[in-house]
Length: 196
Image (tube, rainbow, N blue to C red; front, side, top):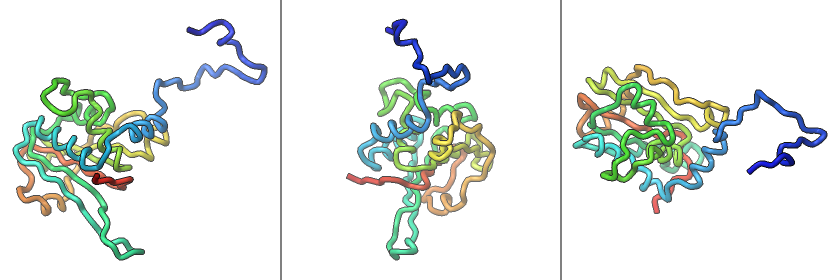
């Protein structure tokens, strides 16, 4: 409990009434979520697979897209993705799905129920997480993303989803192709991958 003495200012301190006193500082919160997040990349990917199953998917595919590192000549994973044929998300649900603590499923039937699964799993191992979702043909997909750089720069809102074509490469990678409904989550700018 604050006392009168706690509210006193030192001689060189001033009150900034316009300062932002949000409960979470975006840059620090992102680092905290990463530090307290998933133990492995596999565990984080399983969270996305669980989301797909909860969305009624009968087919879920996980992709690791690789490239040859120009300096080492070794093959490295460039991005990770999860594609499903679940019910897909509308604009509001897609935007909410990337907010920490704003899930739509709070039952105990699935693995997660606190609304942090998709954003925490994604931002734990990628600096950019982009999500496409569609409810009536993949040509009507909408997309939005989280970017660690944007969050650290002070972005406070999940960008509004916009109509955006799904990268054709994932349809080519897929054994099943894109169905009438579904979601594609792509992690880019990967960080600290761990498979143990």
